[in-house]
Length: 114
Length: 113
Image (tube, rainbow over all chains, first blue to last red; front, side):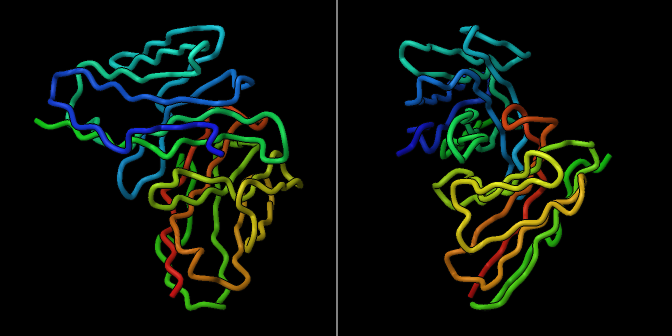
């Protein structure tokens, strides 16, 4: 069963507008979340994170919002630029069990059109 | 700093062949990881090494073995490759523990015929 879900495989946005990428999680024990960005033929790179003690974290054009009661987080990119076109992964550390480590969503492919 | 490097970048194997994917990091990180990425599946953890001398299974370890050769290097071995192991493999490292920001290599694209 997927513990981190990104239900939109793709998103297309016009340059200059806002991009909103969504992520849902099922495990209420998760207390830290990360967003990674991946360009084709490259490894993922860390973008921004948020701890469960906050409901918002901002870094330049990127803001992540966390709604713990809804088990939902979102990444806002304002304004969107063509260089933001990439696959975005939501992830959460799994502290318990034998798996440990980061659990990733399936990703959302963002296309920003000039 | 090169960060995380992986070799080879591409590889084609026949079913039953073996190979080792190499990974090295120059950030003095304690923890290292191997993931595979399949279309529509996101990244799935194969094995990880929380520190030098330790390795543990991740979500999809079957058909793989790993070696943490030293603090810098973490290799992934396929003893008898199968078409189901066709994937893109990513190595990653992080400073400590089992969570938090990880730094990824560029990936190895493996095709098993």
